[in-house]
Length: 439
Ligand SMILES: Cc1ncc(COP(=O)(O)O)c(C=O)c1O
Image (tube, rainbow, N blue to C red; front, side):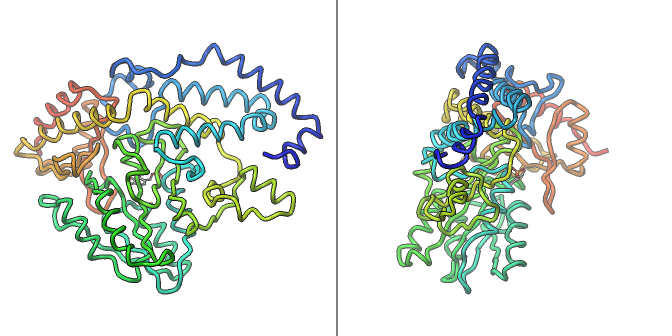
């Protein structure tokens, strides 16, 4: 924030001093309660940091995060400060805390903080990005039949509002035979000279299938070699079920946009998310909601244009938020970094393998998610012969095992082993499913 802008106004009104004094007092008051710097000891210790019921085996934890200790404590710290002096605490923390969150996200993603916009959810990111793409007449959006409600609806709303063309393709014939080559080939064949946007989902919450995003990005890069910058295909990925599962660096992934909530596998505060864009791709995104970024706001107060600011800045929607949640997001990235990205992936894969191999061996179970971790991440979808998916999930719940039903036209029972589970819990779950029989 510059001195002429809102901070200048604050200083002139004398609020700044009292805000600083009060904020310092809150920080000191909570300093003793802060957890020691994030450290990872073992999986039991990690599990103990979540206030999740011990009566249940949580195999739908990705649905909405339970907050681990450092995230919970940070939320409480910010909440107390805001409750005691909303304007003072906001002025003291808004700029530095948002910068901290962006830096933590950038460190985790191997990205630049200025390429990241903060949102409240995956859906908000998808809606803002797809709703505001600058397309020329005749350019189309290519998407798939495998995407989530939020992608499909954002694109449909966009098409209804502007007449944009949205075309859907299927990426594979059958989950039984799907391969990375088939997916990349289908994508390559689906792109036409009119295709300006490709919108896909990294890990399908309908089936657990994981797309080979890196290979798809390479295929798109090769198509783009013969296109001018203004016609090149922009590759957008809903990465919500990969973030906090897959060990990746954005600089190596090759997509143009990654949209994700951080309140699922990342264990970030509920109501948080982000959109990352490659600096070359960001200009295609036009903001829909005015940002409250201090530089943009200050320029407005000075009757100056903010159009020279990085586009990602405009894509963090303004209005006030539940700041205690947003400002605690850096702790979730720190929590994951303390474990280590590769260890996170390894653990989730190990538990998922164990579950999938157990299910595949049961004659009354049809496993839909590919067994190979090349084509799956942390979500396992299956059916039990003669039982509705809802009945399977309800029966598991009665046995204290929490799963979910895929919220799609075709429904499956869905379990998602995560960092919160043990091998023993997977064994217990397999034991219960082994004994499930239709009546
Ligand atoms: C693939 C996918 N994208 C988007 C969403 C919506 O996520 P959010 O609740 O963060 O908006 C979900 C749902 O849970 C999902 O499975």
